[in-house]
Length: 385
Ligand SMILES: Cc1ncc(COP(=O)(O)O)c(C=O)c1O
Image 1 (cartoon, rainbow, N blue to C red):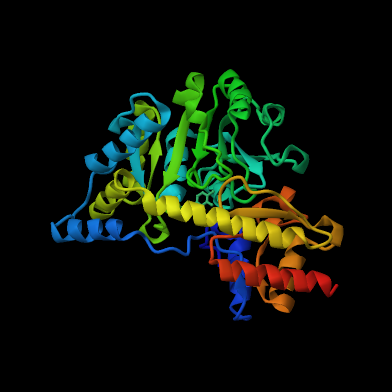
Image 2 (spheres, helix red, strand yellow; image 1 turned 90 degrees about the horizontal axis):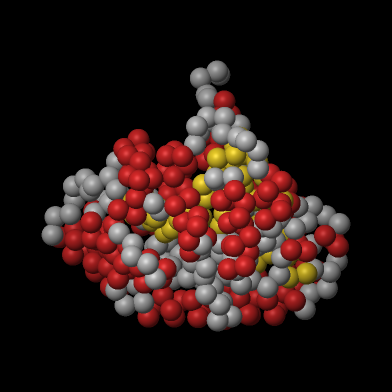
């Protein structure tokens, strides 16, 4: 059969999906794998969508999104960044995933290089390749707490580099961006006139009293940064598929044009609910964040007592990275063994890039009971070795 595209034939299989497929054969597992809030979308958001539907918001919305939605996002950033932001800085997207590819479509040409840290969220590589660009992975090191260092970024830059995709707070390692790191990275970004696609879908999931810091807050590079954001994690709205790109107005207008080729628009009633989510009461989100922090503490404490593994303190996101190198088995093998022999679903770090080999990712997006059970099963497995 030669009618399948080269792209489809070489499409990188998702390591996370592979684990879920395997898990179908082993029901009854404790799920520490999925990066999806187990909360319901808050009622005020659902009510808003129903109201918008009843009011007849059933037709195509503008490509860039409704004005109400873009205003809600602009107001959010005006407050957050302390500078005037406008609806012209905002284009609606089908979640964070589409925000990344819309932005790439507006900035890259075939043959350009795009830098992606290793390990990283699994979707970026396929998106970059889809546009005929070369992926350049830049290694993150445990000894630097998996933070991207400016000198590592500098080394990866060539005359063909067009953009870098960064993600803080981070999946899979749980790191956040510090203002100091941001300044140093900004030097390289400014010197080489790179675009940054800054995936900030976990912006609210920051713990220990810390606050999210965005590269878009570094004034001298702010026009080079496009934030890819989403309501999926912040408001437990993964199934709604709504997010946005936020960046300089000229670039955003081109990003808006790109929506024509992908989805035409994000549905209007979804955008109305999303606008109300962002500008409405934030108490439910705050409660969810506090609960995630409590779950992180439970998981970290339970896993830290297990010999031969090293747990990294998650500062943000609901992902935790664990060094399993002392065991001398591959990450995939350990994830398989944990599922099959211990009944706990995790994912090997190799699913996020070569540098993830020797690590395991566990998530605390599920209930406390599920987390306790999962950690108990992991401990029992290690004790039986
Ligand atoms: C780092 C990162 N970016 C983007 C996404 C996609 O989220 P969305 O539902 O907004 O498309 C995820 C989902 O797990 C993620 O972990």
